[in-house]
Amino acid sequence: MAEGTDLPSSLGKPALRALEGAGYTKLEQFTKISESEVKELHGMGPKALSTLKSSMKAKGLSFHK
Image (tube, rainbow, N blue to C red; front, top):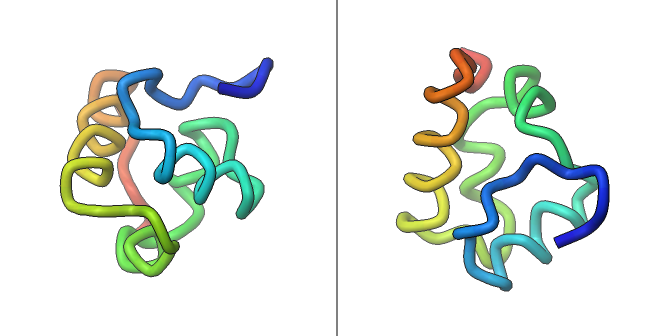
């Protein structure tokens, strides 16, 4: 996991690479994009998406509608 990120450490490596490769390193960034946009990233499966959503919810965040 890259320094300066708050992405969940429990995300699988393919998902972390996909998110970081697309420039996403902070949970707050996902409030500006839709869940479907994240699903399109290669390496983002249902488990990774669920982990991401749970981490966002714990911080009071959600995907852009």
